[in-house]
Amino acid sequence: MTRPSSSTSRPRLADLGVPSGAFARGPENAITDVRGVRVGHATLHGDGLHTGVTAIVPDALAAERRSLPANLSVGNGYGKLVGATQLRELGALETPILLTSTLSVFRVADALLGHLLATPAHARTTTLNPVVGETNDGFLSDIRRRAVGEEQVTEALAAAAPGPVAEGAVGAGAGTVALGYKGGIGTASRLVEVAGRACTVGVLVQTNFSGTLRVAGVPLPAEELLADAPAQPVGNSCMIVVATDAPVDGRQLGRVANRAVFAMRGVGADYAQGSGDYAIAFSVHEQHGPAADDDLSPLFAATMDAVEEALINSVLAAETTVGPEGRTAHAVPIDRVRERLARAGAI
Image (cartoon, rainbow, N blue to C red; front, side, top):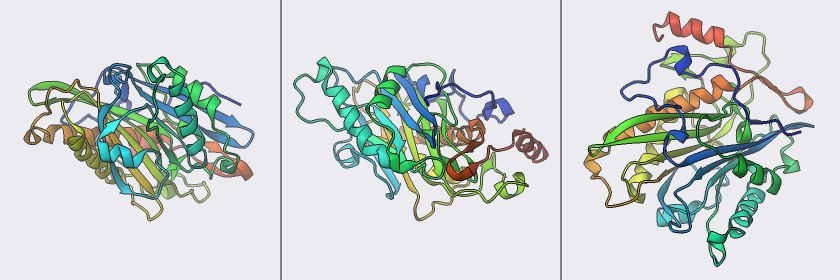
């Protein structure tokens, strides 16, 4: 059963009154605040499945511009990131970025490739590097069925839109768990000045990793906030996508991607052995020479702030989800989060 990708009524971090820090949030506080970046989801819920696809589509990729400056950071390479080596070697992104479930990643990559080769812009293309990331949603979904494929890829790409982005248990986040709670898709953005230019950095995450949740520095352990819940599942990966319109090249975007992975620690990630932690960063800026490295510190700081907020938003937005054999990932209890943040003076 496919459920439309729509945001829940659960609050985001900004709704709880947690300040944005040194940099203002963008209008939607989403990756789509970067001009020309769209997001779409296709979600499968029901019949033993909680899985899907999330598509990040930069409109700057077009017939007249076949690649964007981009790069990759591998925090821990326990994952199946299709397209990784060429992305890192050339510092270039040639396709939309798709996120999905571990055992569906290869079907999704093939479907993305087929979709693009059928477009007029690629009528004569003989080489193309699809980029598809994943996390393992096998705790809440029948992962061996490999239920995600061409139909869901087409749906996610067709649904890709600017504006607000659905978060939580949607798309590639339908069956993920994070920091002892139900995880999922999260997004955030920051407005920052780079080399005298007003820029935006936006982030989208797929959270499925272990550790102890921290919000604004306040620990929120699942074993304390979920008094009657069974033992929580251990998440095992995180995908982070960073988009910006800052004037940076592929090498510099590798440095941005590194900071995105660093930011996971701020929300309590334990970087476990089996956690595949990756960040992809790209820029839609029309290159006329990159900014000097000495001008990049604000971009690095804004990226880390946006990543932390996106990671937290993914957990705040996610609702309790029951998988096969009654396996359950519980939503973080918002009232208890508010209570602890207020007690700590964070809100």
